Image (cartoon, rainbow, N blue to C red):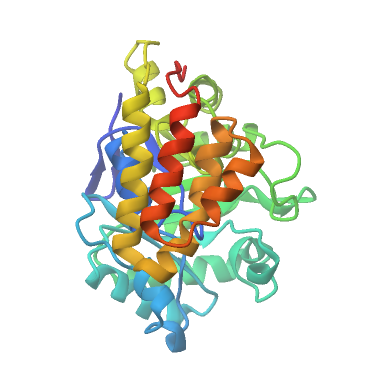
Length: 329
């Protein structure tokens, strides 16, 4: 496996966990790092000044005990606000600050943020320049191939980002308009890699180890970023790493899987507290249990548990009945 050099920061591997709102919080990032992710980016944090002291922003900028390199992604469309938020991210311990120009969610795009920014590359360049000037740590950009199929501007924007001082580009192979419909394309990522001298990371529809290697070969990218493919599946990073090191053998025991899931529940409750934790862990449990083909009725019982101890007990009982000893390759 190769390292990825992001300005002054070295990422010791080629597999990265994507920032995903509601999922890539501190507990899950730590789990993915334990299972081989070389770098994990925190959920997108708001840059608006009036949102900096909310509980949500505090949770999303919490990097306590996370191994380096640590990354915080920001969302916004006002240069001055993003500059201030970037400085706060650096002060919180971020080794890398990322700008979100990839989120396709309607509530984000409706306020001209996320992938909607791709309609205005001049503004994106201005935002990046403001962030670069505000911090001493490397700045990266996560974005899509364009807003629409009639305006594929990823290569041009990538070159402009590099000129603005950005140290790594992460490109998702869909347009903003597509959301998550259809399939990601990788030709634009290949062309971007040929056009810039900074690292390029491929993103989109990478949900298995073999697919990761196919994408790396097709694009020449320096690494892959895994989003939805890592939900309920933190082991995907070890799978990919195994293939990159030349072996196809990666078999998890039932005990390892159970310990990972139960450990996740415990760390999640410790981070959020019992009331909020009981609610917010449900989406993770739903992904885990569906990946192992649990019955919907059984999953519902786990999700409706009334306290953390009951949630853990019901999860363990269900896991004991499932076939977890599988070769994940």
